[in-house]
Image (tube, rainbow, N blue to C red; front, top):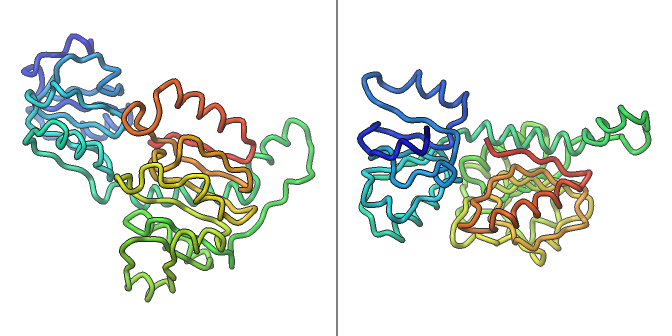
Length: 290
C-alpha cells in the first residue's frame, strides 16, 4: 500500500515515522476535511519514489531524497532538532517552508534521563538478573543526594534536567556556550568547560544539539577525563559520539538511541554491530528514542 501511494494528489500531508499511538493522537487533533497519510516507516523504508503529498512530516530518521525537493511545499520535523532539515535545504537549494517543535517533550526527555540514572545508580539491571540466580552480592545501590551532576548542554532539555537534579539535592554544574545568569541565580549552577566538569561529575547528562560543531565531539580523548565510577547519560543524538568510542572507566552508561544511519555517523550495518557491542555491557541501559 505504501509503495502505491506515490501520486502527490492522493493526500495533502504525509506523516512518516508515525507509530500507532502517535497516529491516533494526531488524528484527534488534525482538522477534518483533509486527506492525511500515515506510516510508521521512514522515507527510505517506504519505497516511495515521489512524495505522496506536497507537505511531509517526519522525525529524524528519514533521509529526504534530493529529487523530492521539486515536489514539496514544506517539511515539518516532529523533533526539537532540525539539523537534518537545514542540511537538506542547504544541499538542494530548495526554497521550502520548514518547521520544527522547539519545546517538544523537554520535560519528558529530562524525566527519561532521570529514570536512567536512578536505575543505574541503584543497580537495577543487576538486581533484575539476580531473580534467576538468587545471587545477592554486589547489588547495593547508592543515593544521588549530595552528588555532583554535570549537565552538558543547558538548553530546553538540559535546563529541565538541571531542575530535577537540583530538586534531588544534587550539586549542579553546567557546560554551555551561552551561560544563562538566571539559572545560576535560581539553582546555584556553576558553568565550566567540559574538560573541567567531567572529572568532578558523579553523573553526567549530555543534552547538546547535533550541529557541525558537536558531530563526533565526544571522543575517547575528551571522555578520558571522566571520573572513575561515574554514570554517563546520553539523551542527545548518537552522532555526537565518535564511532570508535570505547570507554572502560565508567561505572555505567545510560543511552537513548537515535542516530541517522548513513547521513552523519554510521552505515546501517555498522550501526547494528556497534549497538550489539553495547548490548553486551551489563551496566548499560539502552532505550529507543521515542
